[in-house]
Length: 128
Length: 463
Image (cartoon, rainbow over all chains, first blue to last red; front, side, top):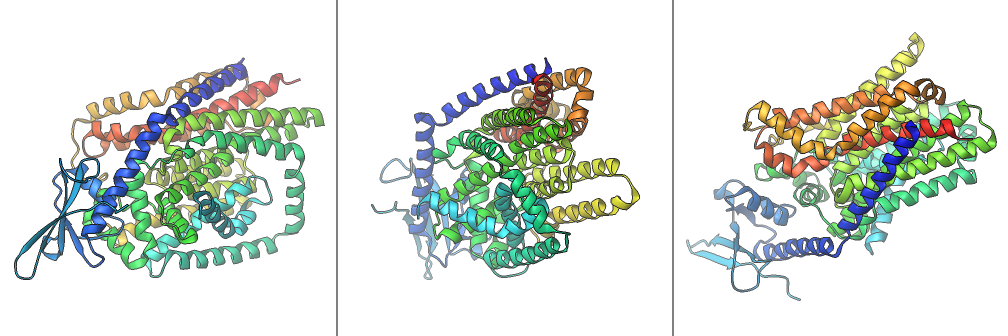
């Protein structure tokens, strides 16, 4: 009796697992995953077009979710600082309505040249 | 190199690094095969910690750690009386066609359970934590140390243990590919290894039962078939519990499955020295994969030690388990200590202000966790029925008292639930973004308890 009850529970669990599996491999799920990958690949390319290998980066993000998004895109390779005075460039992720973007998001960089001139640049997606 | 080729090459490197320690700890059993890359992953995590703490690259330290472990293991094997004969006996026993066929069936179930690996999926935390840390580790001591100390990166939980990121970084170094996909699939492959180990524990229970019952050859084969069937079923169920997390690079499945394997080999089976070797490896994997895993690994070490002391409580045999457990605890506390010593900023999930009263947080935690833990109620009903009607039979089959597994499950509920209730921040946001994976260990333990009773019950009605 105990064995059959447990076996029945396992059978039910397998059916549930099969449902979960088919949900995760559905075209909708596959598309969502592909979009996420493409989004971060695009942000990575934009950030690389703005930040050089010797740059020290300051982030101008005000909210935690945008902060995390930017960290995910540049945190693995860029040298970052919490001190604005140490930074050579500041970057910020903004929504853009026109021009090439990553699902509507664009990186902007702000640099101060030696003469006090402030330069602003927009990230470029990887050339195809 | 293709993703499959890169992952296979990484697994081979990990298996080579972990091969001799695994044979020294576990012997020539079938379960040693998937344990080899897992031992290698533990050495890889130690290498990452050494690179951060001292100097040099992770790969250099992996070579040093693997060499040291191989020399110590070879010496231990040499000192044992007739190690070759023992391993030869293991291989003959494990190389029987019925056992190999059973292994193939469980492996097929594992492949089906993690079939979602076909979908190129990278989880939120995988990008925000594990891949990020892997990029730091890949660039060597100075970059990794600076990044871990950087207050800028505190949102990526720099204090989390290094095993998953270390293996990811190794996959890039070994394959020459820097692709996220290679790193994510390598972690999925480790999940597959540890899922096989946990599933095979059920087959081991059936095989030991056949030996204890002095079953005839036919009955032994039937018990083996029953064990394989139940192991395959619980592995398939585990695939559903893991969901997307099994193949999208999260660390939660790895520590949870490793801890479940620890429960099976240390607390469900009557553990032999070889089983305790399995426990040592999987506890290392759990403890070096995530903070929750470290907590549960410590609980497991203490629970298995207590059981061994109670069951082998003669003066002469107490010193070795105590020493092994003591060394295990020191090793598990090594990473948290290192994090303090090198000045990693306090994790945002540990420090901070608590929002809401304890009662409100406890209620929110209960309501969020219950939908993921229905199996615990089911397991409780089955376990009570089993204790009422089948307790002597369970003893005859050689299974440990069910209360050991329930004890660990209860502590897990208290530790994980307590973190939510007494921890900082907004409880609703925290639960919404994590409860589906922090409950994996408890849910899987529930399913393995159900399976152990299924084996007990069905073994009793086998002809």
